[in-house]
Image 1 (cartoon, rainbow over the protein chains, first blue to last red):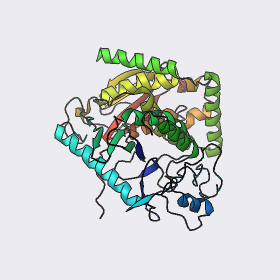
Image 2: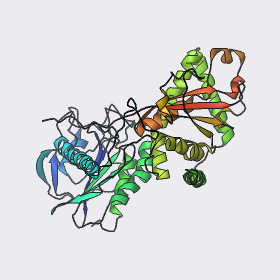
Image 3: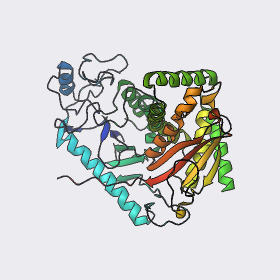
Length: 236
Length: 206
């Protein structure tokens, strides 16, 4: 019973833009993304080392469990992502390194797959339930406009993992992968949205929310998400 | 409709009361005033100031909507009429502690405002908000040249509404049609639905 990883996708639905990644008890890591495959400030663990990557980024790779040695740091350091070589006092000491094998899949590919499955599944579900309507205003309209009717899938389960989805009306998608035996994490994902996300991303003027250049990773957000997830009763 | 309208009023009230961090209304009004004055000095052109205020508002709105969605926990509105109710009774109430009067209008060709004449089947595709009180415009008197220049003092509100609704897949046109600061009898803001932004499935890439 544990939690593997968390992905947050941008509210622009038409593109797969992963703005945040965090993992916990994940035994097999994806390979780091190819350069340009993923935005900076999404996650340190899988972010392709930039040409000028310093020792901090490298040590991050040496102990792959250490997702918290945030090399991207606070996003104020836009042009010097790797400038923060020392771990911040805010972050807890990294857990003891465990040998982590790779899934053999690059992170940017993995992200696309996760996004793809979420999007296809939710569109299929909407179509199946027959409540999926888009009305173009240029057509002749009935008096009351029809808009999308919401019907969201909450999670799906395989023998190996369970995928949980929480989507906001604005289109942010919070996706969590966990152990298959776990109960619904939808509320937890919502709490992440209402709590840390609102506080450290939406209200953080240093984070541009619909940026094409940067993710939303920052020290406070990462720390507080981490604390929240570690505090869950089924986090082991 | 009447019941849900009341529900929205209560919801807005609750949200306003539950909001822990509030800003002094006078400080708020004076800060906003200072901002507008600074813009006027910087741009020296009132229509440009209107534009900049709208743009600022848009940036505010795109973030504010997340706060709103997270706190209000409301579902998606069934139609644009409901959108209007929520904007007026929950949105304005929870952020500014005002509830503008809402009128769902049919835009008639040749009506006031610069809204382009619309086919008559667009009933319900727009609403107007009439502000009895406007916290932005407390203590404000517009000088003669601002009046002549066509300054919409509270134009930031237009941007906020546009930005916020854009993030929930509605493209709207928002503009002031009258303002007491200009000597009009009411302060009225019109919101017109242009279209629902469609979701698109990303292009397959392999």
